[in-house]
Image (tube, rainbow, N blue to C red; front, top):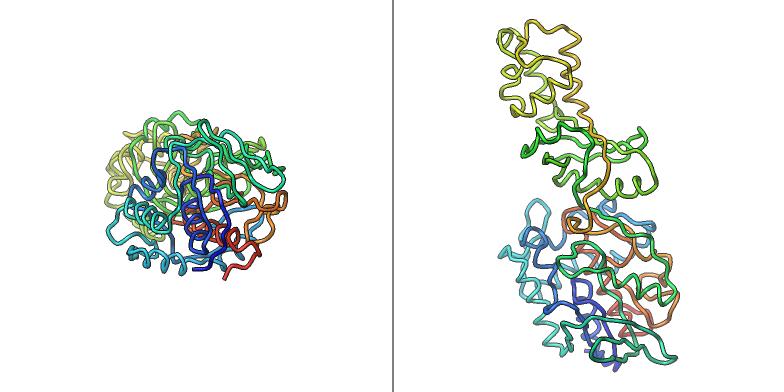
Length: 415
C-alpha cells in the first residue's frame, strides 16, 4: 500500500462514494466517508430488484448517455468491466453471468453492499453515518465540510452525493448545490429509467398486460431510438425495461417543449413476424369468429379489444365480414400502436437521472474539478446515465475508482 498521507473527505456513501473511499484508502490516504443515511450503500440494496446487476459484459458505448461520450469511453478504459469483476472477486463476490448481465453469485444486493463496507472497515475508512452535509468550502489550504454536529477538514474533497432519483433511498440532490458552490454548472436533472404517462384514455383498459414489442420513440415525428422487450401496460401509460431505456430522451424532449410519441410494433416483438404471418394466413379457419375470437392466441383479450376499437371494427363482427380496409387497419394498429407521452414519472419512481455536472468541467478522467483544485466528482452527480443492465453501477465503480485513486495520488497518476 502506498502511503499518500492525504486526508480525504468523501461526501456520499453510495456505490461511487464507497468505491472512491476504498480506492483512496488503498493508496494510504486517511479517508472520512460522510453519509446522511444510517448505513452506507442503501441504494445498492434495491438495485436489480434486490439482486444487484453490478455490471454487464456488453460494454457498447450506446449504453452510456452523456453530453461527452468520448470522456466516458476513455474513463471506462481506466477502470473497466473486467476490473470491476476482478475487484469484487477479490472481495469474495464472484459474478454470475446471465446473458451478459453480471450479478453476485448469491443473487443478493446486500452481499455487494456488505463487501464494500467490510473492505472500507479493513482499510480503516472512518464512516460518519446519519451525517447531513450543510455546507462545503475551501478555506485557502483546506476543505471544510460542516454538518449539524461537527465540521470536518481535509486536503481533498470528493463529491459522490448521487442525484435526485429514488428519494426513498435518501437522495436529495445535495451534491448539485455543493458542486455549484465551487463554481460548477448543473444541467437540470430529470427522471430517467422510469415509466411514461400517456394521454390515451384506453390505457386503463390495458392495465396489467405484459407484451413483447418493439418500442420506437418518435420526437416531433422523427425516430429517436428503438428498443425491444417486454412492455408493461399500466393505468397511467407504459412501463417495462424497453420503455425505461427510452425515458431519458423523453424527459429531455418534453423539457424542450417537443412532441413525444411511443409507437409499439406488436408483431416484431413476437418472433420476427411469425405471429403476423399465421394471423394473415388462417382466414379460412377463423372466418366465422368474432373480432376478439379472431385474435385468440395472438394477443391478450384486452389488448385485442383496444386494437379492434382503434381500427374501427366491432368486437362482434365476424372476420369474414371485415372489409379489406378494416383488416389492413387492424394489422397496421398492431404494427404502430401509438401513445402520446405527456410526462415521465417523477424522481420518486426513477432509477437514475439524466443531467448533472458536465464532464467538460473536469480535468480529464482523474475526475478532478476544473473549477476547484483538490475537488473531485463521481457517480450520478455527473452528466452520465446508463441504460438498464448494470451500466449505471459500472459508471459508479469507474468514476469512484478514478476519483479516489487520483485524489490520493495527487498527480493524476492512476496506476
